[in-house]
Image (tube, rainbow, N blue to C red; front, side):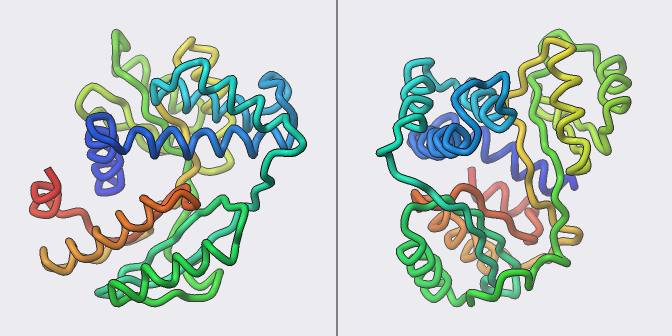
Length: 247
């Protein structure tokens, strides 16, 4: 669990400082668009849209960008997206789980397969990695003036399985079925998380040597740079040595 949270933290730090912000925005815009097409443009009646807007605010997306994404989703002539997943193995037997939102599945699967091939991996069949990952709710909350002990009692009451404080942010983990309850609890407390997402967390991690790990990281970065890919999960252990090499 801590390895996953460590990776989430470093990605947040790095992403806030470099050109990846535009990639983050594009992925959130796509999520808002899909949410609107799915259940309408009213956040009060559309939990998925409400969550996407909360994540947009957490990423410091301007209000105008959010509104344009909502309008785009409301436009019947705008592109329709389908959501799909891909599973495979990277160098060293590392499991890779990919979530994509695309208007052209043939393009997306072709790209995914080419990335795997480029870095010595293999694209597998859907469902082949279901035993490796659990789906969990992951919330990133700025500490601000929150009292850690009091906050911990509140989130445990709402179903938190794990709470960690790292670099001024609380990282909350919940079971998938408690995701909605945690969102409601944070709303009741008047707390707006920096991010709130359902993520796929590895049950166990695999440790590789530094060079092999860096090769897997390059593959993951290729996936994350693809506009069709919303999220990438893996079961590689994020060692301190590897973390330092990413700084």
